[in-house]
Length: 133
Image 1: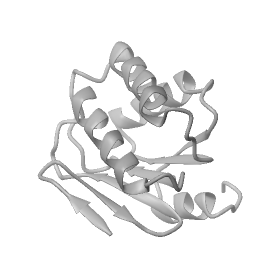
Image 2 (image 1 turned 120 degrees about the vertical axis):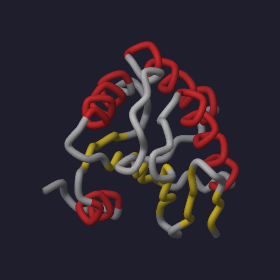
Image 3 (image 1 turned 90 degrees about the vertical axis):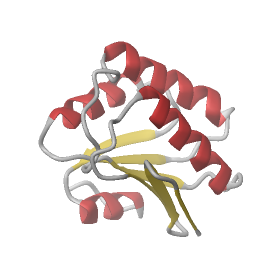
Image 4 (image 1 turned 60 degrees about the vertical axis):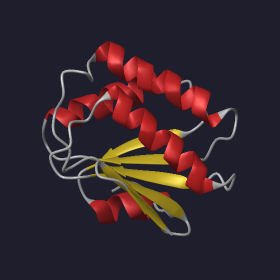
């Protein structure tokens, strides 16, 4: 199953959900919120792990410290106690890497592991239970 809108797509890969921004789409708090809500709709209570591919997203001033804090709060609200085990965030070596690290540090109290990757194969391996290389 795959859901695609102009700004993002979510693909059900059976063992995890791949959440991907469309190329050059500004990564905003509103967009991330919409993506999370759609992810929960597709998940249908299975609590699948997820891989957020942010490599093609465009930077946005909206995602600063306060914006990332809002995203963490939104994750808590959207999940309503239905947590999965792992979230992999796939980024390039750029500004989004810093945002992902900020999210990871602010999400430390959420009951899931968050890891940051630049290689999709390593992220998929980690999601499937392998060790982080």
